[in-house]
Length: 448
Image 1 (cartoon, rainbow, N blue to C red):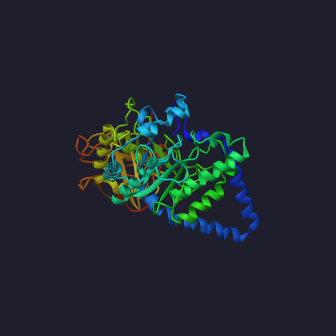
Image 2 (image 1 turned 90 degrees about the vertical axis):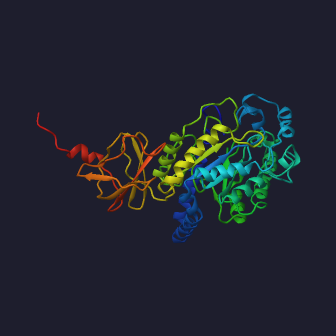
Image 3 (image 1 turned 90 degrees about the horizontal axis):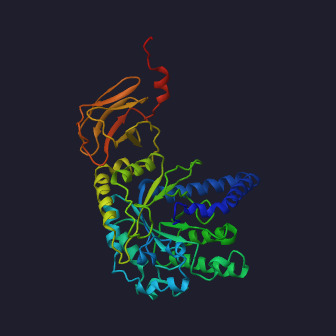
């Protein structure tokens, strides 16, 4: 992950034109090929829908950034930000000695928090591999850990019934060809084969893998990485896997970072965020998000059909920072009572309120009230008839009154009955739709 407010996607700016060229080329090719190309595209979309069905329903996942940077505890970009020489930094590999099966606590916390899948760093920008590889000695089994940390993670996630993903950084600060591949063709060929080889091992040696999460394509573009061939190999090895868009190809989903922005083209998307301001363990970073903020972010993602991939940065021994545990435990209490409002594929049209946000499942609208107003909660411009309403956490029925311009839910407690957010489930006669412009235009006005 990128530091100092610069997002990882900023590293992809140089490849933006390549992406547009690829998209235009694909569209032109389809037009020239005629109906057969359309059939192929339809088949690809159908396969993507099949592969991604579980992911859309999951909505909430755990990101895990863990590596040699955790030993220093000064952000995952410490090697770059402090200009640490490779020969000095690689000595951390001997000091990285996590306790066995630390990933079991991660997976248990993820399940408790209501997260349905996990994505762990197999290799971050520092170049150290948390997995067993025959292609280098800079890996967990041959250094301080003395064992395969990726395998422990995969087994822990599966034991909790969670889907399994690997993060893999294409950028590499350690490999001698990691930078010179941009200007030396022989170096590029060596580094690309090395990179493809590591990915092949990841997707061959650990059973079924559900997500491959590429990161930072610097310093090459899709052609340089041979990303088409890369993805072809990935799907041959793992036919059910889904991949993101950070190897300079569109992939199956987009990846806004540290912000919640739905893909304007209607593609699947996943917002990845930190719990504080660092991805890797940073012992001095105390800017923790509150449980309310996490729940609100989760609701915002689900409203627009996106996923929320929320990060933890374990300590060098693999233990989870106490604040991460505290926040995710409280979030888990909320999801245990209100999870049905999140784990849904349905996008939601209603969105206007100054103290609530919304999700939807079928004809049921979920009103997530994060600033509790008191005994009456009101919603303007709901154009769909309400049949019934209840507090989702308790099942308690809620009285309501509806006219052309608003629906009012009455007789509620003066204090919020659920924390950190109270959810009111509203059963509607059809798909719930909201039009606040109608209220502004048509609401009767008194004479002056």
